[in-house]
Length: 250
Image (tube, rainbow, N blue to C red; front, side, top):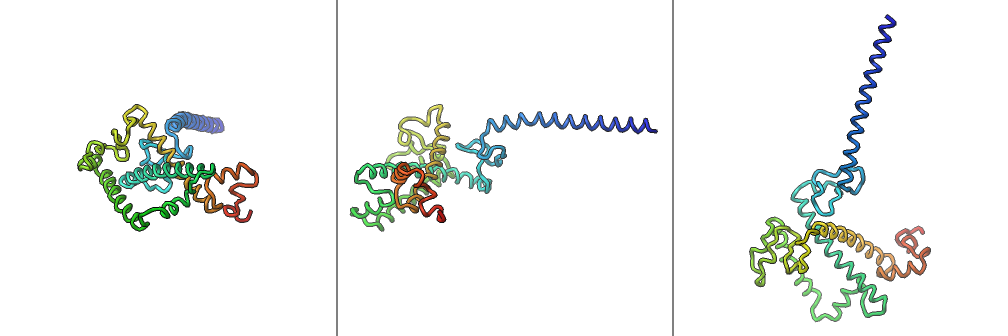
């Protein structure tokens, strides 16, 4: 009886060892594939599986959608175009802010970005209400046409606008191409997809930068170049933590 019990115990231990080694082997086999997948698909949070609707096919897609806003395909299409437009406006705006701020710091008669609109209206023969109404009508027409092109790519080329039709017939919303929108032909080269990613990255950086510019002005009443000059002049005493607003108790 004792020997039979010992034999049974030995067989049980052996079977457990075999099962354990099998599980370890399976885990070892899975790990390289997970690492390989992570290496081929960079994500915003390493080790985090991106949502199913962000499969890496979009420019600048790093799987960032913690609120799952893009799970609806129609909403995702809209968000892609909305981000692209915000990126482009932000890049132009930030470039303009830096240019005028640098000019003002150099002594040129440039207004700071937060005063530019007021300065222009002071010498403008057109009233603010007229300008606002005209801009509303024009932007409404442009954005309506762009929305129609999102629903039916290439439809912008169906109508005649000042004799131009072919230049608006692109089948890719947001990237019209052609000579009118792409005089250097960058959208026709092999690096076009790379340029798309770079545009999104720079645009996202510009959006964050503009928020920073607005926050800086709210805290210090100055432009970004003046803030930078003040910080360089006294790097240990002039920081975001010592302006009296960002961190009130310091």
